[in-house]
Image (cartoon, rainbow, N blue to C red; front, side, top):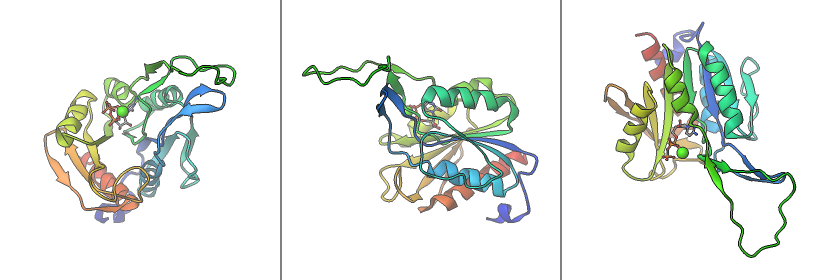
Length: 224
Ligand code: CTP
Ligand code: CA
């Protein structure tokens, strides 16, 4: 709050945010997806825009409207489309935040026609999608790079592993174990793990307030 109140702390900064789920086509009418609402990423986009940043929001399918006309909203469907958009914009931004719930796998082939139910057993072969955030981590120059992690066990250890492996400045750990937090919820309880090993724990808050907390940490780092 304090920092956001100090005028426009991210003026002249460009921020890339990924948000929402991805849909991986099985055939023309079916897909593999997840329950991500996109809310966290859209709140981050609104908060970054309010802080004076130029925001590019790359989002998978969601019912949410663009939070602000100044935000460049790029709508995509699949992980591969999100990968193309995110890697295209990354070299020109100062800060990137990966809030999307990217499907880890996609059907190896997407059928051209609607699949008929003509067998008792149906096998779907899946192949791994590229890791968008890890790819940005490899391409990183002087950008700040922030990721999310959703874990159900060994939370801090797993999140710390992703922080290091993906070359992040910090990672936001969301716990499904805390009531009120998670995908469909309006609230979130987070911990932030920094690359220097520092950990900050936050209270259960609305996603809007969580977005402001995350933005404040980014502002502190971008002024270092
Ligand atoms: N992520 C991404 N591209 C992917 C998968 C994940 O950009 N193909 C990003 C997410 O947006 C998130 C972070 O990586 O910021 C961690 O995602 P998560 O699903 O928690 O971790 P994974 O690396 O996919 O590992 P796993 O699902 O096996 O725990
Ligand atoms: Ca994953």
